[in-house]
Every structure is written in C-alpha cells, then in structure tokens.
Picture 1: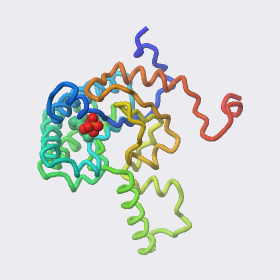
Picture 2 (picture 1 turned 180 degrees about the vertical axis):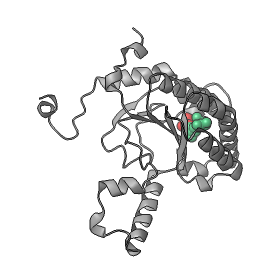
Picture 3 (picture 1 turned 135 degrees about the horizontal axis):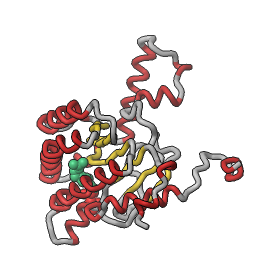
Length: 247
Ligand code: FPP
C-alpha cells in the first residue's frame, strides 16, 4: 500500500509547517551554484503543495525566507526574490484553479516592491478560496513576530483598549501573524539539521517534530505522505499521561 493510501483521513493534522532546508548543499553536490538549488527547490514546493491539496490538508506553512536570510550574499538574496516573483506570477492561476488560498506571514513590507506587489495580487486573487491555505513565511522570524506582538499589545494597553489582566494565550495568538490559523500539529525539517531556526516558536509548543535527511530539492509529495503516516503513529499527550489519553 502506498503511503498516500495509508493516511488515516480521520486523524489528519490540520496544519503542517515545513522548514525547507538543503537547497545550497543539493546544489553543491551537483556542482551547481546555490541558486540552482533554490530553483530545484521550487519544483519540490510545487509537488508538496499539490500533494497537500490531494489529501485535503487545511493549512501548510512553508519557511521560504527568514529574517536572517537577508544577511546572505546580495546576489543570492536578489536571485531568491526574483525566483519568488517569477514563481508567484507563474503559479497564481494554478493555485486559484485548485482552490488554494495564498497568505503570508512575516515582514512583507521589507520585500522588494515587485515581490510585494506580485504577492498582493496573488493573495487577493485567491482570498475567497476554501481549499488548502498555503502560508508562505517570508522575511519571517519568530522573535521578530513576538516583538511586534509585544509592541502592539503594549500600545493597546497604553491606549486603554485592553487591560494588562486581559493578556492570556488567546490574546497573544491574536497579535501574532498567524492570527486565526490553528497551531501546526506537525513540523517537518529537511536536510538532516535538527534545529527550529526561529520558526513559529510560540505556535509549535505542542507540535510533533520530524527531521528528514532528504535535501529539500529531493523532497516530494510521497515524502510528505510518509511523514504524515509517521505522525499518525505517534501518541500526542499534551502533558498528560498515556493512561489519561487512552481512557
Ligand atoms: C534553504 O536552503 C532554503 C531557503 C533559504 C529558501 C527556500 C526557497 C525556495 C525553496 C524557493 C522559493 C520558494 C517558494 C515558496 C516559491 P539553504 O539555502 O539554507 O540550503 P543549505 O542549508 O544547504 O545551504
């Protein structure tokens, strides 16, 4: 039986987040420039998004560009931004036809204007779609997001829109970029690195983690299906005992 057939539709995670890592190493292994690895990485994005749609996943967040990635060589940053513009403009219609809703998290204002404009177009084109919610993390870091939330909460307290005593988990959720999106139950990172790299630190409090040794350009929908089968074999206890969960 294929991994796709083994997936239990009654026990699907609502939200999967992926740290797409290993494009540079993939390129090096193939004696190509790093940007070539990113281009191949786009094919993996396409395939994985298609797979996510096929199994009816509700939310998929992809870590496409971190706040820290701005410090990479200028040439690589420019190429990544151009790749993003080209991919979004090329794929927006296909996303729309497949009922995918595109959204972003991160400091979108820091992106070059052509990139921001292309994204805004694709976001508004797909905003009414009810299938997969594809969330691109762009110029995103969790610490940046939390700092923004603290600033905005403080502002609202100072302006008497909220009392300090009102601040609870739900309020914090509402001030994060991911407002309205359920926390990911499952986080996947490719390339064999065992790190979180400033990604969704608040939101992954109880997420199951899976580290795949595959480099991102080699990652395909079958790998996602296999990962979900692995996830479904796990017991999620949320701090309780196994007996409490199974009674
Ligand atoms: C990590 O590999 C990957 C990135 C920083 C960029 C990911 C971008 C894409 C897959 C292409 C564009 C995405 C979309 C959504 C259209 P790395 O460069 O850190 O690899 P390394 O660790 O081997 O150097």
